[in-house]
Length: 60
Image 1 (tube, rainbow, N blue to C red):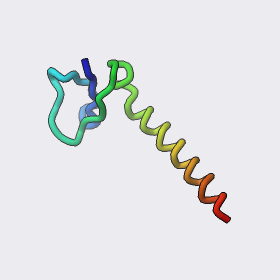
Image 2 (cartoon, rainbow, N blue to C red):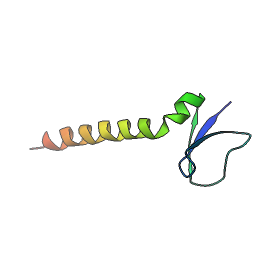
Image 3 (spheres, rainbow, N blue to C red):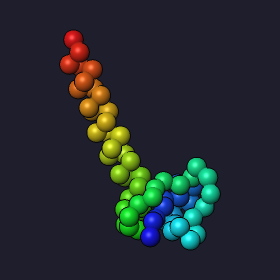
């Protein structure tokens, strides 16, 4: 079963009850992973930003 995180409501949803539209993040393999969607996205963004900064500073 797939799980989704609804950024509008802050709720985890399943395929059976998921909302329509751009308010969903996922799919995730577990309810726990879906509930941590915003934290995971933040961590990935920070890692990508750090990698971009490292790459840009290495261009000199």
